[in-house]
Image (cartoon, rainbow, N blue to C red; front, side):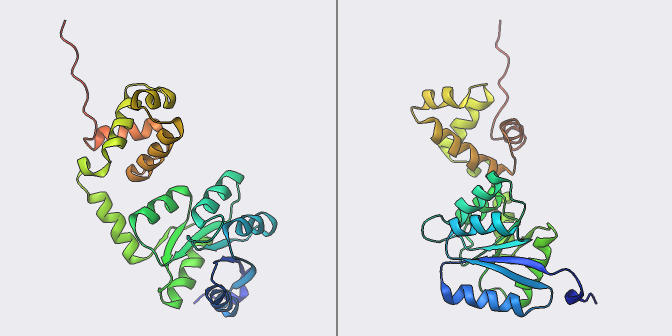
Length: 221
């Protein structure tokens, strides 16, 4: 059995807006072998600042916080190039929370009612860069993968990916759909998350693979 105390401790930042939850998590990890809590944050903005200053190995991130929420903080950390692993710890396991968090760069997603050992194991795995998902979250993702292709994307998302596949830029797609360019970008991010891809070309390819897009027949002379 590995002696975690003999290893370099995993440096943690705990971000949660509820003082009782934050204190409880900090105490739990501080008292566990192989962990060191180096900072606490009550909102996403403080979590980002601490991550830049302290460069922790793992950030325990709540999603719903006042000011900058956890999802925005995860995106900001990615934009800044902070290499700390983010382990989302929340009471929510709905699709609308799970997919955006993972797409934004979270290494794992655990629920606050997870057993203590699962939280410790999850943090150790996250520190190594391994993906961590609570069973209910994993089940939701599997169900999403198994969703019949036509129901996977909304009607508007299908319109956007069709225009992208036809070679339109975001600006051109926005003009054709009478929406803003920012809205097109938002739809594309949702499409990437749902299809499990990271860019436009991969999204188009995956959409064809899943039958969301149908190759156009060549025009008759």
